[in-house]
Amino acid sequence: MNSFFSFLVRTLVAIPITVISWFVCMFSFDQTFFLSSSISLGVGFLTYWLLGIYMKFLFVKKQGLSTKEFRYITKNIKEAKKKMDRLQKALFSIRHIPSLKQRIDLLRVTRKIFSLTKSEPKRFYRAEQFYFSHLDSAVELTEKYVFLSSQPKKSLEVQKALSDTRKTLNELLLSIEQDLYQMLANDIDQLHFELDVAKHSMKNSKLNESRKIK
Image 1 (cartoon, rainbow, N blue to C red):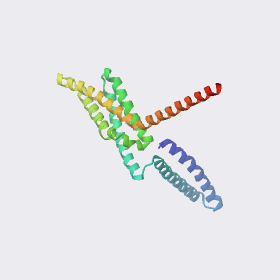
Image 2 (cartoon, rainbow, N blue to C red):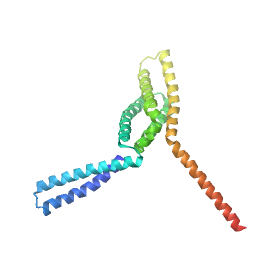
Image 3 (cartoon, helix red, strand yellow):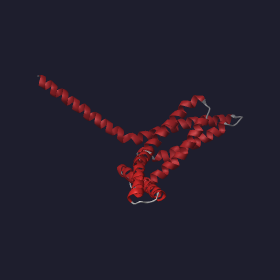
């Protein structure tokens, strides 16, 4: 659910209700200014809160999830956000220029999976391997790489470990790209189906036109 959109809608509804409540209390019920302000603010906050609950309910229902499932996914998304922050910090700390594109791609793909899950939580189940395995591996590998690469003197063993880590990260990137493809598999299948329908429809239209000409 878009947090900014939710905040905007709730605010645009709550403010007019707060103002109307103040006028009603002040002039219709002849309350004091302080009491009218307190009541109207309370009504406004209550409206804002209840509308947030209702919008979340509609969002969860639209996603086809139960409240328990949504809480479970939200919990894992929050944990993943912390890991994403660690991954980004580690990737930006690496100074190995030849692997820059690899690191940018890794960050781009992980962010895409994360943003898709936030906007459509049901997709979480298609990316469980990313959240429970691949993301953890990416964080651990990049942080260890940063630690080793920061050492003032690098032995041949350390240099080999760094080289092996870069290769493993590249393989991990391919796995994470596959995670993203898995998330989008249904969309791709649906697109292929719609393309086939469109092509079939265009073919029939051309046949009908040719028959009319004859």
